[in-house]
Length: 99
Image (cartoon, rainbow, N blue to C red; front, side):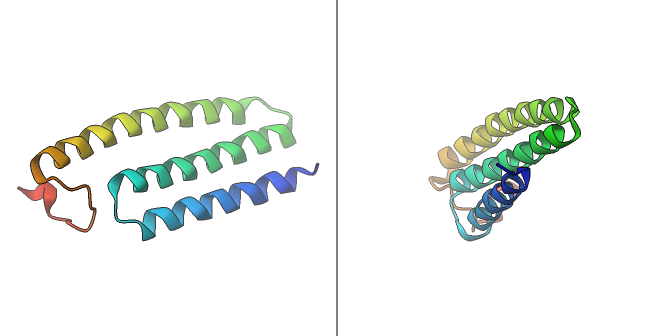
């Protein structure tokens, strides 16, 4: 299988994630879209590491996974805090954090 197919798959996954972030109004679903975009970046890193015969892309993918885990923890904590005070997770209410 050609490595170009992996890059095409990463582009499709990134597009799906970006569409989810733009279209959906729930903050939890938007976080899932961001996770899809980060996973597609991981796929690109590993693909280029395979093309170049180097391990640096895999190391970078590992660091992206660490950042993604931290993003989920902080993002969910903020969403739970907002839900407790406002009883909604909609991102349409842009002024939630101003008060």
